[in-house]
Amino acid sequence: MVVKGTKQEHMIVVPHRPWYGAGVFTLFLVLLATLSWLTYGYGLEEGMKTRGELVLERDQLRNALAGYEERLASVRQELADLKLGAQVDTRANEEVRQSMESLQSQIAELNEEIRFYKGVMVPNAGAKGLRIERLDISSAAQSNQYRFSLMLTQVVDKHEFIQGVVGITVAGKQGDKVTSYQLNELSESFAGDIRFRFRYFQNVEGEITVPEGFSPTHMLIVAQPARAGMVAIERTFDWQLREA
Image (cartoon, rainbow, N blue to C red):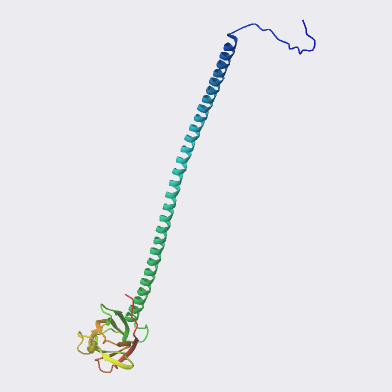
């Protein structure tokens, strides 16, 4: 029966099922667990796959690094060899240059010796008679000591012994004053003039010690033959030290 003037509500009648809700909830949990397990499995599989790829990439990088390090060591060794080779070449070139200079110096000395012997042995070579051929001066042990080597020669058609005496004078400056010394004043080895006797040539060698403050400028050599009719000869040499 319907009463006029009142609001009517519709009602639905459902059967009473007390385990239905629990079953739906349980099914939901099972689905959620299954989804979670599938997600975990997929993530684990992808993680293992990614890890494998990373390990492989790491190994490749390690191998590449080892190769680069080996190549770098090889390049460094090649560079060291090149530097060593360059140093060896430089030293070799320097040794060759020094050897060439030494050989050129020896050649010059040999040419000088050849010229000298030709002058002595060949009668037509240059002026004949007694010669003051050359004078070499070099440093000795102390700063004011010097060695000298004087060579006398004879160029004649017929070589016979010639003898006589040689006087040596060392001239220079003692402060502002021009001063000269005889050989016997500078060397204890020579008491006076030097005697010579030879057929072709003769070397006279000795040491001199100059006084402190004395600066030599030249040496005067006078050779006086003992044979009658032969005149004395003289020659002046500048004070130039020969390199050892």
